[in-house]
Image 1 (cartoon, rainbow, N blue to C red):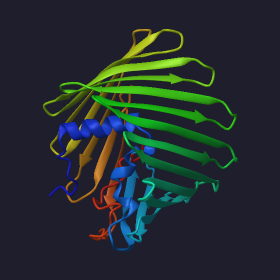
Image 2 (tube, rainbow, N blue to C red):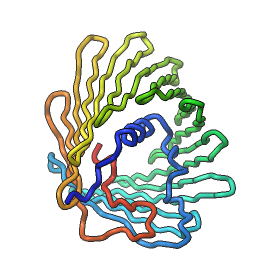
Image 3 (cartoon, one colour):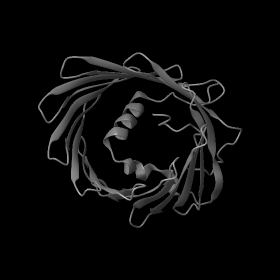
Image 4 (cartoon, rainbow, N blue to C red):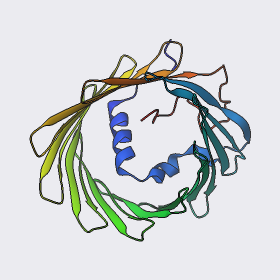
Length: 307
């Protein structure tokens, strides 16, 4: 029996995929049960996965969660590599039901010993939410981000800005409009030098997946096109990406996420040169999250496994 349920509706998968690209990291704040509010506490619940790569790399990824059930929770993540280098991060989350604000404060240590911090917040508004955050790297440089997401009659709009350690700012503006079978998205990025890049495309749901086609135009006026497809079935999600540059050359890339019998998942990437890389994540031991664990109740490996 396949332990990971990949029988998701096409509309759900397409929506999640677009929001992962289009919305800020904490845009899902108000559906995040890890903020607490379950009415009880939990301790030490989570999962570990043994990740093995086709290139010989790999290690153990672990995630443990605990919370008070009153709007606070803590998530600890760790990575133990085969080469003896380890990394870890701790995130403390708090949901303030009065101000309708979710905050996340994270500290981490990289495999080379450098430390970093990240602090983000998202506040629910009448028609959407606002968000801001800051990240400080091992060298002491800080990047900040702020923005808003506003629901419209037939979609949503989002605006955001990023200010780097050098004090220069980049901006991003996007409009998403619902269509009969999907939506249209129009995005403009303005860099620190004032130059702009646009991405205009259409996402359409199909019988067992979706398509995403569009055009990206750079600051020099030259355009590239993309034609991406995704299918769902037989315990797998298959994505095929095609990119045609201004010179007319086309590049392709494929990604397959396959649930494995007995538990775990394998991710395979086929590069433009035809070479493949793969990673398999297998649950370690029989540890299962308890019924009161709102942070990781699926027991599934991280969705960004070995990007």
